[in-house]
Amino acid sequence: MSAIWLWLAAALMAATALLHSVLGERKLIAPILALHTGVLAVPLARQVLRFGWHLTSGLMVVCAAAMIEPRSPARLIAIIGSIWLLSGLADAVYTRGRHIGWPALVAAGAFALLGSIG
Image (cartoon, rainbow, N blue to C red):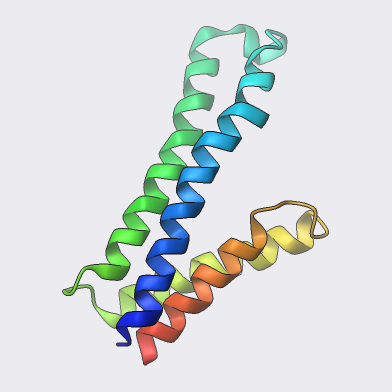
């Protein structure tokens, strides 16, 4: 495995997690939760939405950690990289390139895949 690609993937995944959590909370989650209409009037639904959003960011950090863990198998790195790459491509298609996250997802996935074979 190629360490430089894995460190680049990890850095991009960690940065994506941080931006996802901070910007997502400020620009998406907080405004949605301010609506208090429909299902968002239910406190549990509001808590689960916020929890799920930040859990996603936490799982991104776990992916980053797997990139730089020396005992991570190349196959696991390739699976994680494939998921990031395919998620980024799906995001680009689905949002017609308007979502700011797709380039980071694609790049992190590509770096991970390169690292897994290098």
